[in-house]
Length: 114
Image (cartoon, rainbow, N blue to C red; front, side):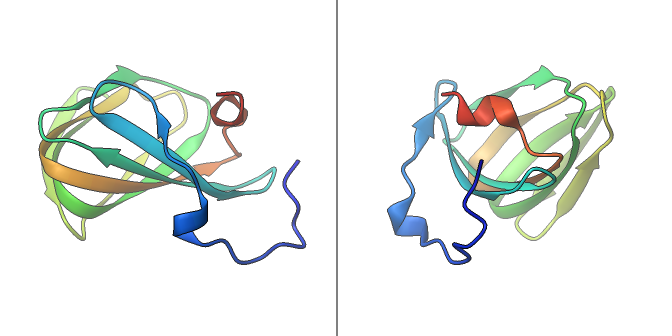
């Protein structure tokens, strides 16, 4: 489990993990109940439709995305936010090179196994 005595983490010290073509992520910090993840997308990259039991909120740090949640699509850009309920099918298409900051409750143990 995470060492909660370490409070500060520097972006430059965290390695990118490749996920899908044109997509990579960094698990920035986590505890049992919370995880924050930075996900970078090349233009045209796809965050495949999927569902999970975790609650998710995401902030568009950079770029433009077509976000689909439970069959509803919306174009979001830098500064926008979206929320994904537990088990809702969701995914994104990156329209302009970008970065999402994803927050999960509880943490995504599957992200630590890669």
